[in-house]
Image (cartoon, rainbow, N blue to C red; front, top):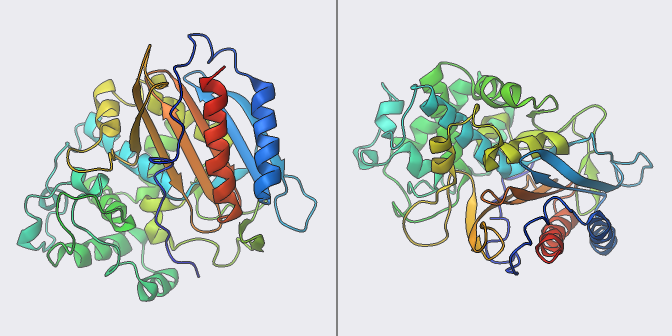
Length: 373
């Protein structure tokens, strides 16, 4: 069994700050340089497999993959393979809530008691909203809630997932916040409670809302939940593969915080949509809300996205870039995108240790390549 892992904010401190992109650099992607960067990082970090892509609002441009689906075997990883996204699921959960806002079924700054009618909520939560959960500023801490005993029990829990998440929310909200309200404290529990709120508002399981509100309209045919099974890579830790038929992921109740998987092309479609490619899917107002960080002390964190400001990210000058990383300790995924410029980078690996080094190094090099092209 694997404990939850704090998502890395994909380079809030480590990503490159380089000069502005020339106007046509997005179109003239330097594929040879990207291939060379992929080869070099794969050789340096030596994960079982490493995949990457460069995405615009029109979809994936350059893509590449190296390595094998399972350490010690010969079956090569492919561009069609599905990769576990870990905490990068959070931005998707926030996006489906945004869809509910667009549909008039929810609203921004919705108090917790308005979402959880009938639930006994401690009065100390009265001024806290679902937005605060999305921004990790609600004062909800993982430590007392997502511990080893909860993980063991959740893996064996046979109740319907909405019932499990409602019970988690009731336990979290039945006592006062353990952390400082308004200050950033990253935690998976925030998004489990947000998922429970989505279920309370819709009367459907989070998985069904994700399918109907995100996977289907964006055409993400490879998307699913948990460790990819069947004809897919295995996750690894320190190079040791873990059979997806066993305990190869966090319990399903944690889903809204980090269990989505999909192939590179489908993840690219989601990133493109968050850069504005699908105004028919998310209104511009909702997309802006999802990508705008909360006020308050650093770090700048929006709804499932870390936000940095970089010289290359704006049109003709500095602008915001969104970023996040995710891992269940057996996989690693990183994304960096500049919505104003319409360019993004994705790196994926089926190892939570060497894969982390590979993904963070490669995404930095891809950004450098295209920033100086």
